[in-house]
Length: 343
Image (tube, rainbow, N blue to C red; front, side, top):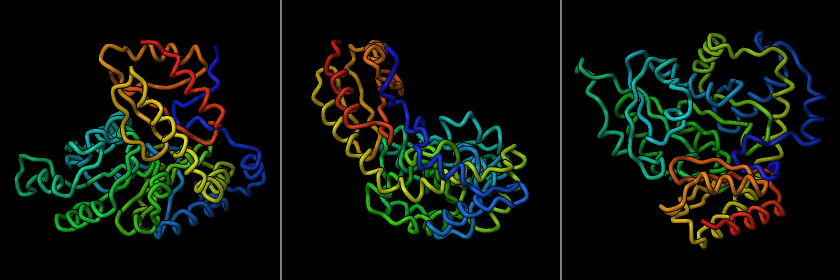
């Protein structure tokens, strides 16, 4: 059966009629020359939302993260992040390839480490044997942590540790809006804490493509040059930026609906005999672990036969991600499929 319920990722959404209309009506120019009014409007809106001075529109979240790492480091420096971090696991080795940096992996709680861990893992800069600790990278929400949200108080402690030890602090906020909605937090609180922030428009917000890097005017001016070097300069990009503007204006509050669906599915999965564990469901991601005798390939084949597309996240780990293109009726069909599986 062809998959009709796609919970592989929140990147699979398609623009609806209103977003398409906004894209078709966009006023455009050459963004490499800084002349696309819709791109400029998107950048200004995103920067103002977080209280940052400037923003840069890029094709992908991987690019915005990698630009930030390049901004804050020199070859031979070290980046500190969690062992589950997207910048380490899922960006093609970009930290090494693009910036020539090594990585110090921290063992946090579902991707969330502490200020104490940061300080305990710093290298002595005066010792030439070690790479220089330069940058701390936080991911919120944590994809591989099951959409886990950070505690803002702990981020403030990490900020203080960074200030005390001359470290930059970057936020991979690919799903930051999910955290803001789930916890009722203010975007400006994050803007005050991080030197740079990457936000993604093509995940839960439902735009077809695009991410933004936020920071100081100096950071974004340098990032503009680096984006060119990375091959990320786009011309009449306003057609894409218009989708991002529409997403910021219309698709943020509705993320709560995705969270509701995820909680419902997580609670039902926890009752199934072949499910050993469901990671705490905080946002739109559900990751569950199968019992040791159950092969994830068997469940995946069963789901495909019932019209469900999902992904695995490791041995006996399965992920469902909820988004604006998953209806309540599809949620119930998904639950019927998982209940029908016999290990």
